[in-house]
Image (cartoon, rainbow, N blue to C red):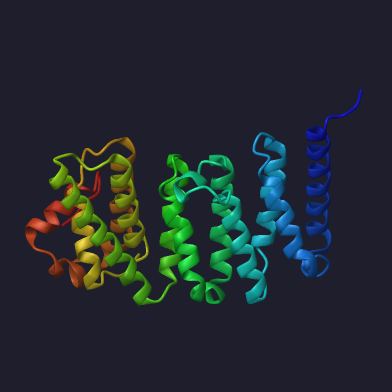
Length: 282
């Protein structure tokens, strides 16, 4: 019986992926580094076969191996751009909102985990690449999948952590202004804020807080207070808010009384305390 073109392509893709994985395990990085750009391009194409879970897992393992190595600046940037294709692939005629529907949530979460590793190891190479990275992660924070949205927020927060102060302040300004826009639009139309927009706002504020694990600069105070205003959003929103404040308290409680408490009024401290489910807050 003759094999269909689709099955042939799947079989070739499986063979190719396993061959690359074997090369990486035995001879990486010296053997394949000169061909890495072409290998990544091919793997990105292979990864779009979202129906084959085993093939996705193989590609994911390859990217994990790749993410543990240190590359020259040009190579690391190429990898980031290919990951961007992988998680936000679109046809030329499609809008930014439509493009995130094309890749499975499973592939996106796997790839975002790899992205975190690459960004951590190549942080100094990628600081001037911040706009591209941030744009990709902000797009994925609007993904329909809760897992993808959450992991995108974590990845953005981690990248902001190693970014210059002006980058953090710019993101803070962006989301505070976004909040004001949502409020004005809601008041004008006499409607509640759309849940998707609210989730995006909550995730953005959470990423900013995540980017400051051991400090509270002046511009972070309105972010903390704004996020603490939201309650009873829905299961996803409430969980994100609670986790954000719980993690914030874990990294700030030791120095709270000495360094940060005086920045807040008693009412403001109480407001934040309400968002700290199960945590003691003085």
